[in-house]
Each structure stands twice: as structure tokens, then as C-alpha cells.
Length: 184
Image (tube, rainbow, N blue to C red; front, side, top):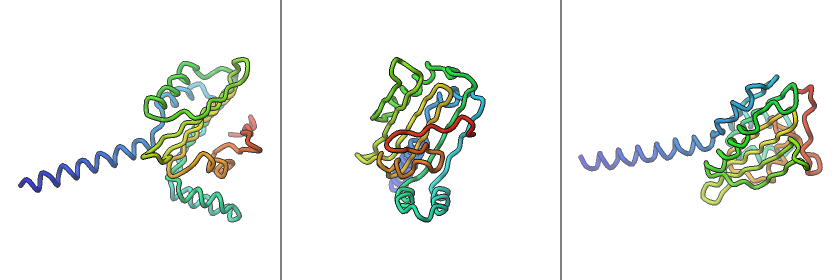
């Protein structure tokens, strides 16, 4: 009977650990939904590994893209457009940044507009046993807000190869190319 109890406890422990890893991989700060409530347009989607592999096959000439996608578990994109500047709550945006910190993410990059303007870019990385398992990029503009989260075995440099694909902004010469206002 004791062997049964030990086996049962091991099974429960393994299930809880696997559930925790799944939760962290798919984790998105709670405030993201609130940030988009005044948006005039919203684009939100998640692509799992199999969908990314299928989509990467559309660009047969990009070997780097297929190499990076092989290690990616999923991509989640939350993109909000606003009719006027300043329509998202800066306090909620601050709480989203705090949620990343509280969840154990490392804040790697913080680029803000000079003179306190509304533009900002933040990059967070989440480690699992000294290996990068999640990357999140938050790009804020006057009338737009984008959160891109990538989970899997990935490096910040790999984001360059994913740029321009799967809703991730294109990077041209190390500079993020803004999405035109008319784009959904």
C-alpha cells in the first residue's frame, strides 16, 4: 500500500510541475486585456508550434526562420490601435511591467522616447535553468500598443529572424519599423 501512495505522490508532483511549466509558457500579464479596452481595433492571436512550422513553410527561402521556428513552442501577439493619442492607461501599463518583474522575468531593455514622450520599448526574458525559455517585447506608441511573447528555446538574436513574420514587427537595420496606421 505504501508503494501505491509514493507512486501517487510522484504522479501528482509531476503533474503539478508540468502544469506550472505550461502556465509559465503561456503566461500573459493580466493588465493586457485592460490596456486594450479603449482600442479602436484589436488583433490578438496565439500560434502553437505546429502552426508556426506550417506558416514557416510558406517562405521556402528563409532557412534561418525555419531553424528558429524549430525551437519555438508558441507566439502570442496582442496588438491594439487607438483613435487618439494617450487612450491607454499608463498606470495599467506600469502594472503590466510590474507583473513581469513579479513573475520572475528579467527586464533586459528599456527604451523610451526622449522628453518623456509616449513611445517605449521593453524587452523581458524568462529563464528556465539558465536557458532562455520566454521572451516578451512590449512596444508602445502614441496610438498603438503591441505585446509579442515568444516561448521556447530562443535567443534575443532569434527575434531578428522572426521579425516580419507571425505579427512580430519587422526590424530594419536594428530599428523597429512601425506598422502603418491603416494596417489592422
